[in-house]
Length: 176
Image (tube, rainbow, N blue to C red; front, top):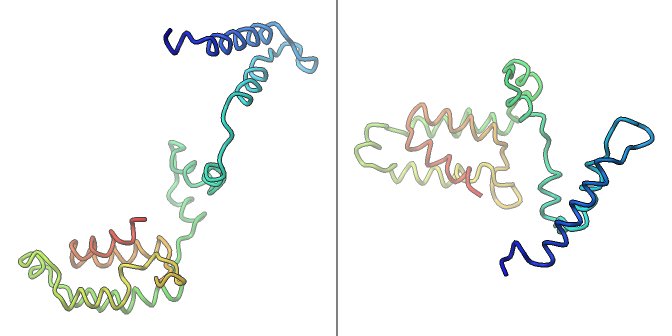
């Protein structure tokens, strides 16, 4: 006996066929011409489908589709998206970009980094001391608590001086 011919599966298929057959000829009083095909199938699916877990529910209920909808509409307007979402840096993020990131950029020697295939020990120390690898980690866990936009601006600025340094800072903030 194959799994597709099990008595339970045959009974379930038979139920679906019976419900679907009744639904095809059944009409609702509100809409005399509408066929109620979906309702019985949906109710059957609700009975036989497993319940959604708390984790799955949290994932499904988090966020919105607004940004994705704008991007995947087929005709997104960058101007409208920027007006709608207004990416701005906090005062703390702007200060970090203007000060610590600027100092790091001045420390970077792209030719020497390429030659050594590594950042200098002085640069590594500066990156660690100023929490470049913990920009997006919340403050209560010891990070800087910056947003994604600040992270992107920092990486963008560093990349203007050294791709290796930019990737060094970017990757730890992108994982997890």
